[in-house]
Length: 85
Image (spheres, one colour):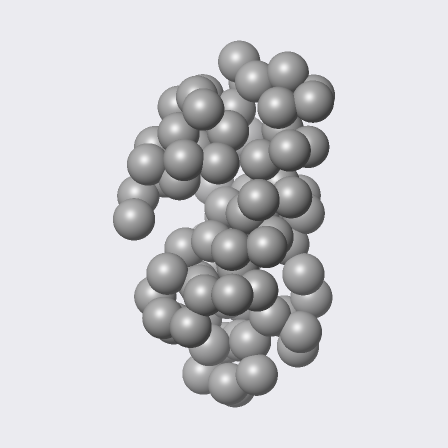
């Protein structure tokens, strides 16, 4: 599950800047529902990462009951913070 696939699946576009606010809101709702239902750790992480990038991710303690998964999410957030703007 890569970024472009997720964007097309949930928002109908590959570029989030081309989506209208209504499309973004509906896509975020679908993504949140799927995240809550997903049981595969890798797919859950990919969904959470997209939600984080778009500013709508649940808190780590809620999203990842496993400490190792929370650490991976923190590492992901740290890597994003170090990217040039």
